[in-house]
Image (cartoon, rainbow, N blue to C red; front, side, top):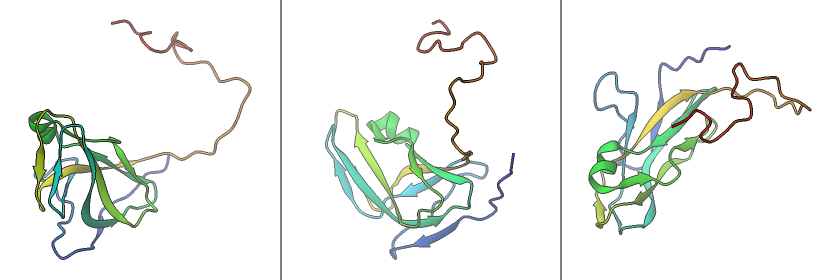
Amino acid sequence: MATVACDELHVRLLRPDARPPARTRPGDAGFDLSAVEDFALAPGERRVVPTGVAIALPPGVAGLVVPRSGLAARHGISVVNGPGLVDPNYRGELRVILVNLGDEPFTGRAGDRIAQLLLVPFLAPEVSVVADLPPSLDERGENGFGSSGR
């Protein structure tokens, strides 16, 4: 298996008030993404929120846009397509589709941290259509939902 090297994340700020993705603490896995505009979400409402940032991911690395746990726990704010996928060949603005799953309206301000970006290596093998799949390594086989018990 090939290894993926990623020592630097190239970031382009598309607006003067945009903030680059940043880790809150050393060693954090996710990079915080910040809103570049004020926004409001009524309960049940979703909105595409711009970050004003574009990135260049290296080949073999994808970006996953995931919710911030504090926003989810306190306000019910989540990412609709969580995780959102950023392909390595995408060079446009990162925008986050937020949804308010809470009971109260939520107002976000420019500069608020709204989601996290997690960088992950991925495999992209050629697809081979076969008549039969090789057997699984245990007794699970074709057993699906609930097959491992409670």
